[in-house]
Every structure is written in C-alpha cells, then in structure tokens.
Image 1: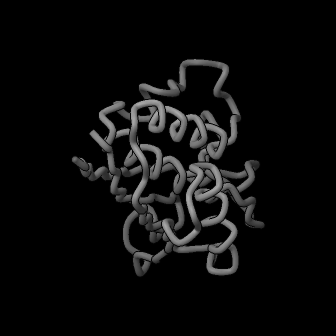
Image 2: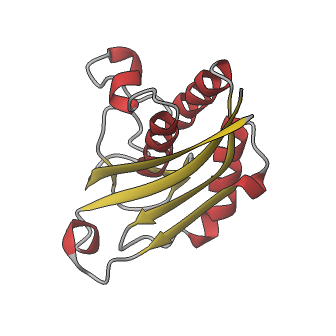
Image 3: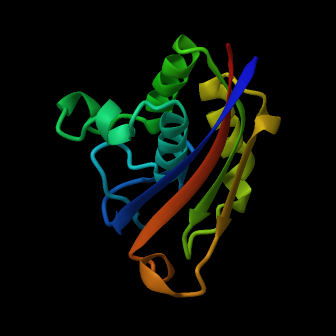
Length: 161
C-alpha cells in the first residue's frame, strides 16, 4: 500500500548589504543578499520546511538550529541533501515539489533551470519533479518594497508500506 503525504513550507528573510544573494543554490548578481545564519537561501528553506513537514520531521529550525555554530554560513543545498537523506532513511520518496519565490527584484528567470537542477540533484530527483517560479507582489508589503524576500513550497511525498 502507498501512503501519500503533503507538506507546505514558508520562509522569509530580510535583504541586506554585504551578503551574496543565493537562491536555489545559485549566486545571483545583485546589490544585496539575504540575511540569515546560513546562506539564507529562502527558496531552499521553504522547500526543506515542506519536506520536513510532510515527513513529520518538524521544521528546519529543529533540524538545523540557528544557535548551532556548525550551520553558520552553510550552504542550504548541503542542508537540503541532509533532509533528502532523512526522508530516504524513513522510507519516503518525493513525488514532486513546487515552490514560489516572492520578490520584487531581481529577475530570476535566467537562473531558474539551474536552480531546479540544483534542488533536484540535492534530493536525487529528476528535474521534471521540481518546479520553481517567482512572482512580484506589485510593490506591496515587505517583498514588494524590496526589504525582503519570501517563498512558499508544496511537496508530495510517497511512502511504501
């Protein structure tokens, strides 16, 4: 018998001077980056939270606490690989995942294919199982005024029993 589990993830980070902008494991040329304990890859963080939620692993704060210096500046793609390992260890496989970045700028379309490949590779998936997209918020709120970025992710997990 197959069991299906759905997970939703959400993350947000403030934009700040002096940090690289990492999204989907890609460094994107931009005048500001995201503030956080790790590389602050808001898109990958939302994906990890969705995966962790679907598998009842808690969230990324539980798995990789920002109070642990081992995670300072760490690549979120590296953390995503660890989440993938935990899923496989518990008998889960990812059916598909879909994530949306909320950001007024910069345009991420030119980087989307590489971002999808990075996420798929970290989880051992085919690129067709991963869909990443972005939208602006028409100048509204903290994402619209450019002070931060947010991301949502939804995943479907399968577990053979």
